[in-house]
Amino acid sequence: MTETNWLSRRERGTVLGIRAAFRFATLVGRTPTKLLVAAIALWYRLFDRRSVRCSQDWLRRVTGRRAGFWAVYRHLRTFAQVTLDRAFLLTGRTQSLQFTRTGLELLEQQQKSGRGAVLIGAHLGSYEAMRAGGRHDDLRIRIVGYFANARMINELMHELNPAWKTQVIHLGEDPVNVMANVQDAVEHGEFVAMMADRTGLNDRTVDATFFGERAAFSSGPFLLASILRCPVYLVFGLYRAPNRYDLHCERFADRIDVPRKDREGALQRWAQAYAERVEHHARQAPENWFNFHDFWAPRTAAPTVPTASPEASTP
Image (cartoon, rainbow, N blue to C red):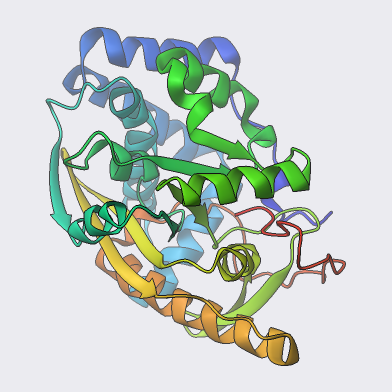
């Protein structure tokens, strides 16, 4: 396993510290926690060399200039704020938050058709904001992902919202069972959400040009969407200080086709189209980029897996 693999990183902090932060946030409200967010961000800016280095590299690519102390601090503070906001989004305490919505009517129309769809996002902003900021509570979204690397956070998510575990599909389970759950969700009008900007252990990847340089993206979401043969949408929930989330949804494809004769070529074209849209939105809100690892580092090719399994793998 290489150092750049995000799955190799342990969760930071302790169970007590994480619980205390979230409990404090839900107890006193969002405004008083801004001091806590600022302190957390400052600590990481001073002592987490890896995150600082990755932030500097990212901001340089976006802005074309060297990122100073405070630019990196603002990036880390945005991440801390969005992370802490999950406590409010999961418990429905969104009175202090504002939402703008662009394209969410597409999901409402899709739901009326009676069949679900695939949603593909990125570690750009907040997925929870996309779910909590919709106009309709009956917009059912199941997140497909690998959650074993963040057990402490996930346990707390369940405590804050007992229904949380029913809203996720864990890729660490039996592949056949995962595929059955995903297909069942789509057939019953639910949306299955994945991220394609982060690769995991034994995950199939495909390269695409991203901010002028080749980077590896997960091919799993595109392969899974091709198996489901359903519409695909891109979704992003971008944070704007001090309390706004701009929710974006756009149609990506009526259906993703990955023909056997040109599997790699098709995956590369879909990944490139995805990378270009992520780059577009990232340029609008660069401090919302939350991949704190060497995103452009070369990856070792993963072993081939059968296309019938939800090699969909880790988002």
